[in-house]
Image (cartoon, rainbow, N blue to C red; front, side, top):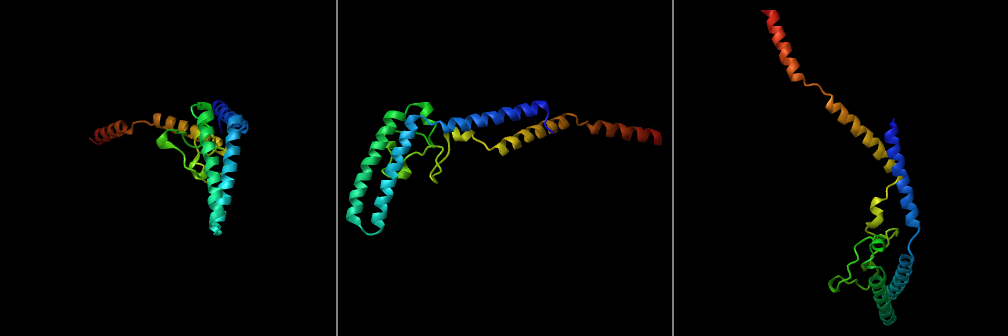
Length: 176
């Protein structure tokens, strides 16, 4: 059973999770545009890859050249509109390093994903680090109470070594 204080903490955590979920629904326009561009580039890349697998190498080569342009423009959009803006960067699953040595490749896996993406390449991070299920919030509340109870028990443990020594002395005196 949670105490009033424990329930209040649980309720605050629960409200915080609801606010986080609401915030994740309201993506900034720059993030929506990045997602749109990444989706288009990924789709074109997958079509080119499919042509390559089917042995249509000439067509695949032309399509890969087209996708290279899409990914280059995506990298420019990322560095011009998003990189350096802390509130926008937290929407990504990894840091947005845009130096020459940190440039993105020309394939979908090289580009950061939005934290709400269900992609297998999504590495988490950003706001998603703080997102917990309601079950996790409940378990945390109960664990906090259990930790407090065990801490109280440890404080109230009586030192029995002195009592045993006194008891032995009393037994010795009574047997004399």
